[in-house]
Image 1 (cartoon, helix red, strand yellow):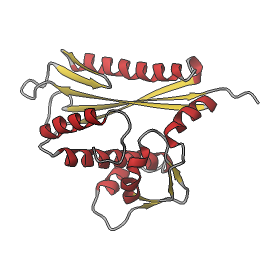
Image 2 (cartoon, rainbow, N blue to C red):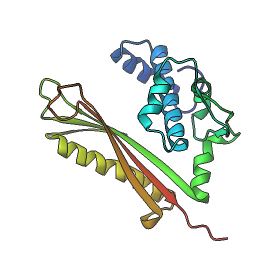
Image 3 (cartoon, rainbow, N blue to C red):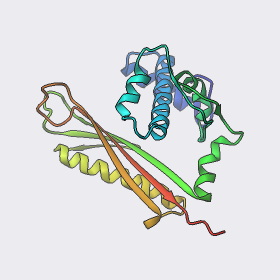
Image 4 (cartoon, rainbow, N blue to C red):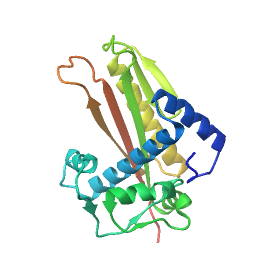
Length: 217
């Protein structure tokens, strides 16, 4: 849509941007730009959280999202891997001061890494009540490739966790990893206004799988 990453179906991307932008009251260009900024922000947050192990994630978020005349500076290079990473380099450079590198074959870097040793898969799933007028019943689960509805929050959370783990396990199996070679963890973040005596207004579930292949030298 922005002309920075033109792989796959451009027409489908344009149609999706138009429809989703309409829901957000944005033009397609504004919507795509906003998505790019959010993706880069999440990339920076995960990177900094990994490096700054003793700093709470919430503190890093406040600095990234704040309007300060300062930003994080890294003393190690940052190598971007994965299909569309080239399109996010500029936005990432605005968030962190680092030597950001995009290898010639960055698009297949993750696949090579999985074949040689360590594979990482993240699955993000969103849970929201179907209607804020009835916040204690009927919850929607938004997962990659599916949208499901459950009568109670507990069932929605249970299914979301199950879906996340399956997505991770299926990915690892494709990489030839399974069983004790894979470690899966999950993190749940909820959003609710003050005085909200109902299940969370929004739940973001992150399921992460790390697979390590035994290397024989």
